[in-house]
Image 1 (cartoon, rainbow, N blue to C red):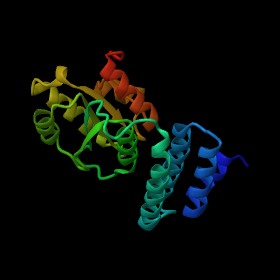
Image 2 (tube, helix red, strand yellow; image 1 turned 135 degrees about the horizontal axis):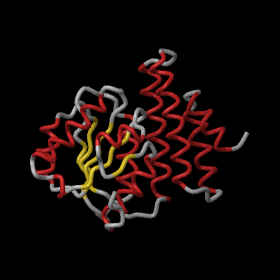
Image 3 (spheres, rainbow, N blue to C red; image 1 turned 45 degrees about the vertical axis):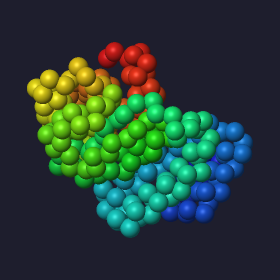
Length: 214
């Protein structure tokens, strides 16, 4: 079993001590820190699926989130950006009717270590709140997250509300979530979508450099 597989196994078994030890070993071996976080993201997604199926309960979700937080703290110093470097502002939230925030929180953690200023609106965020936040904080990027299938419509309505408010050309919109596929993205019409938090950070960096126009 590889170290990455052992790390995933530690997540699924809620073994914080082993997870920390494996992460330290991987960092000592100069493994790409984003790769480490991606393994942990996979663990969180697997745990989320077990939660949805009733195999895991809220206590396991909370414990897993704490393990991810501890791992993130270990990895942060290896990501190469000073906390004082502000690359831009990202407003982010889970859309109305959806209270899942693990995926969003993982993305927020990576954005923070990547040097972004984050305005986290939390969960169950209304269309109006997204519009208000754009006017208040003047972000370069707006991130929307969802886990539930019926939240896809809420994402569409939020994007439409931003357009109707005359703000669509002032921000780039990135969406993410376990239920998003090409058809949903085509319907919602963001500038980008991904279910990979590390890739999402890279997309945001491309937005700021003006490299991504889709």
